[in-house]
Structure formats: C-alpha cells, structure tokens
Image (cartoon, rainbow, N blue to C red):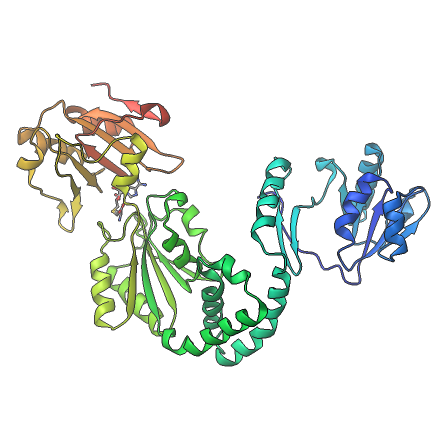
Length: 461
Ligand code: SAH
C-alpha cells in the first residue's frame, strides 16, 4: 500500500483550489460536500462554479496565481488547465508543508482523491493508486447499486441506538460482538434496507435476546490450504465476529487479514527451532478466553478435522461445558488435487483413497504398507516431507512398482505453489533436488494433468 487512506476533518479548515475551469469544477464537485471553507483562485470561472458561489458553497477570488496565495490553506488543489503551472503550485505548497494535489499528475501529488460512494456519513472510498481508474469506476458503479440510498440515515439512527446498547452491554467487546451480529450476517443487504422502525425493533429484540447468547463460544474454523478464495462463507462470518483469533502456522496471511481488525490475534504455531505452544497451553487458552464470554475463532490450516488435533480441543471444550461449532475447510489434499487437475477417486481404478501422515507422535508413522503398495492404491501423505525416503523405501520393500506416479504439491493454492512430478523410485531425490521444504502433500498414484499452469519440476530419473 503506497497511499494511506485517511479521512481529513474539514470543519474550520480552508481548502484552496487554483483554477476555474472544468478541471477545478470536477474537484469542487466533491469538495463542496465537505464543511471546508473553499476558496477558488482564478481569473475566470465556469458558470457552474459561479452558481456554487451564488449558493455560498465557496468563495471566488478573481486573480492570477501568486506564491503568497498558498499560505494558510490546509490542502491545495492545483487544478488550472495548465499542467506546468499546476506542478509548480503543488511544489510551492509542498515547500510550505501543505499537502497538494496537482490535477492529473500523480507524480506531483501528495495525495490522490479516491472514487467515492457517498452515503454520508457512510463513505466508501475506492482507490487503485492510479493504476486502473476504469476498475475503480466499475467497483463504484457496483457498490452504488448495492448500497441503499438512505444508508446514511441508517447510520445516524444507529448512532442514536448505540447509547441504549451501551447501557445494556457496558463491556466494549460485548458491544462489538453485538453489532457484528446485527450487521455481520448474510442478510446484510436486507438489514440495510430496513425502514427505521423495523431496524430499531430488530436491534431492541437482539438486545433482549442478548443474555442467552452471552456465554462464550469457540468456533473451530478450517482456513483452507492458503488461497483466501477457498474460505467458506461460514468461515468468513466467523472471522468477522471473532473477539479472539487463535491461529496455527499454516494459516496464510491473506486469510488472517480477513479477520476482524479489533480482534486479539494469538499465534500458537510451532516455529522451527523456536518456542512452541503446547496443546495443553492451547486448550487452557481456549477455556480462559471462552469463560470471559468471548467469541473465539480457532483457526486451523486446511480442514480442522484432518490431522488438526481438533478432537483434543473438542473434548476439552465439551468437558468444560463451552459451546463450540465446527466450520469445515478445504483440506490440503483437495486443494492440491484441484490445482493439478486430477480426481482423487477414479471409477474403475481406486475405490478408496487414504489420507495418511508421514509423522506421528513417535516419529515416522508406520502404515499398512502392503495395502498401500498394491497397484491401484492411491494415497495422500500429509506431513511427509521429512519422511519421504522412509515412505519410498517402505512401499518399494512391500512390492510397489518403482514406476508408480507421484506428484508432490508444495504450498498448494498459494502464489508460491510448486509441483514436482516424479516416480516412486526417485521420490526422495527429486524432492531434494526441487528443494521441497513444505508444507507439501505427496500424492501417491497421481500424475498431474494441468502441468502447464503450475511450475512443474519434471523428474530426471
Ligand atoms: N488440517 C490440515 C492438515 C494439517 S497437517 C488440512 O486439512 O490440510 C499439516 C500438513 O498439511 C502439512 O505438513 C502438509 O502436508 C499439509 N498442508 C497444509 N497446507 C498445505 C498446502 N497449502 N499445500 C500442501 N500441503 C499442505
């Protein structure tokens, strides 16, 4: 993010606009909605600007530009029809410590004005840092359609209702959860279209029911393999209403960024060679936070119910009588299979697929190698990077064909995804050559179909 979006106070502030033609007019169209004292400095002004002057929305000073015109303004818009002059005015303003915008010259601007969807006091600003104004306009048009025209009124009504909600719910995080529930559902657009009376009733009813839902709760959420587009709707909703987000190492940054900004974020992943939080600590943390009446989102990579120790957390919550809910996620195997364009099961070939772990609590995990070594057997190995040579050896000893296709997908669905296509005989060596560090799944019995779309490293066996 190169440009920081901020909303600047305009009450009691002077904004000076240099120029009186079409360019100035387009800037003024937004500026006249503010409470700033607007001064337009130009020898000539358009009829529209003259009309605004008549309406007392701005003051016109008919004169040509002089350096002394800049001082005292909070913001300067250099918006004459002369680009060279505009850049000069912006430079002079900057020298005096005043933020300047030179029309249509991004390099001469201290700030740029976003496309706006104006439902004052609700404002949605859309910026593309000047890269693609066309997209900004399309997004604006889309939001214009979706946001009801009297959204501003609803915001003002909510402002009034907040006092009442505060009386019932003195704790800030309780109020935040309350409003997240009012606005956070999939019914948002219906909610926003309610008339003031119905909306007030909805808020009052929710307040009455508040006591019952006040007890803390834990939502175990599957964060998927990394690409945030693969999150479920339920996962997004949970993230939006969380007071606390407790997350693992494999949860991607992009997914975390969808969480509520005010939430408390607690990392409980294992850092290689660094301190790690034990499962007992995590269990204790869940209970401690839930007993405070908070909504905790326990965010795990992939699906929480596959190699995620969810059962241990569920048992603890169950025993402590804390309400919990589970939101499934897309497991790494499913994400990886989709990326390489293969079906996990194929009619007439494999009537089952095994998800197995390369590691268990004791070290390399023993499996039913005899079954896995059979010709049409297919399996997905999780946590198998370190164990790849062990798995390869066990399968070969038990009679698996050295030619069995294996596809290794590292960082499936993430921008840094890497795919290695190999055979069982060369599995461990090819993984080393390709510098696979994980997270990766070893897909035994699968060869990639969509080789062209991912970075594939072909086995050289
Ligand atoms: N609950 C998770 C699995 C946790 S075990 C799920 O359902 O996916 C951790 C293992 O998951 C990693 O060692 C790796 O084998 C696999 N994994 C997780 N994310 C992955 C990704 N983006 N790409 C490939 N493998 C991944």
